[in-house]
Length: 442
Image 1 (cartoon, rainbow, N blue to C red):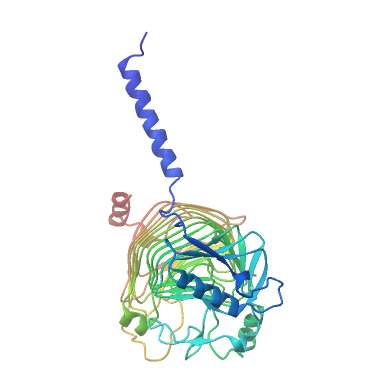
Image 2: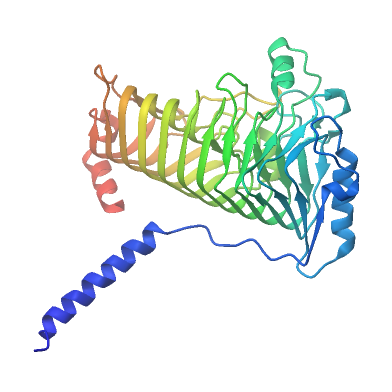
């Protein structure tokens, strides 16, 4: 006997739900590495992976060869197993840098040999010191279609010599990143380990269409300013399935510094961050504090942070200007974290004394939901700016517990709503209008 029509419809509906749920579970960044028409090895250009030979020239010659080949679909630069000591080198367009299993690209510690480049226009000077800055170990500007991938090879910054100079106050210029791509598009970074960067690890700035997935980023917790991944004045960025344990924010979205960022006016927008696990003495997920060009349309979900200073830290300051708006953070698990959440308008330094003290940032439409935390010391702080209150802040299903009672929320110059929040939210988020706004939003 054929099953009743109603049962068929019910089974079809259930199957549709399961398919939809499976699709959500498999949600991932769009884009696969392109097939290249040619392949060259750094070993064919005088390189030696013995850990002693300096291969800066070999990498430069290999990249120049990739550029000259003009192969259909571009070309791959293959890095065989071994330790490839090198100074900084530039990439080119339509290129894949492929690290074999057991391949290590290791930065030289001969710091005086590192070239200097101009400061970013949205920062006006080096981030640490006036003047220029050291070029990143792997660098590119004005490129299109760049892939850095492999079989979990390693890019090792040997940053300890730089950290020591920072600690002793002997740095002449701002430290280099491990990877910086500027004004570039269609970028994929995957299946590589970044370790011991002198400064920020991965820094796409003024870029678009960036995918960073299946990447591991490592540095000691006492290494200064070794942020994991910092998209900066960039759009259409997707970061997923990464493990990050460093000495500063695991992920920090930025967009320029005070008057220079305001003038440059290039926001970070349309950014997705998902399935990130990590640990940091600072923040697991951060926005700021350099947000003068604006940050908008951000989704961060399925995050897991442990042994960290802050689970979520959204930070700006008087003089920053710009905006942080339309940010959703959801499905976050925290363990052994000091602050579950901090949203603050008094964080970060200034490039010089010429910043406009009347340039107040706008922080609006932040939704933070489905947060579970254990071994939390303090629930958090939401502190706006007196003449620029943070608005439409919605907390929903935020549960933070500790071995001892979690210190309560602190709020100032903020409006919004809170639903099902423990410990009990501050009164600024419990008004009828704020709760209604939050209910309608969700």
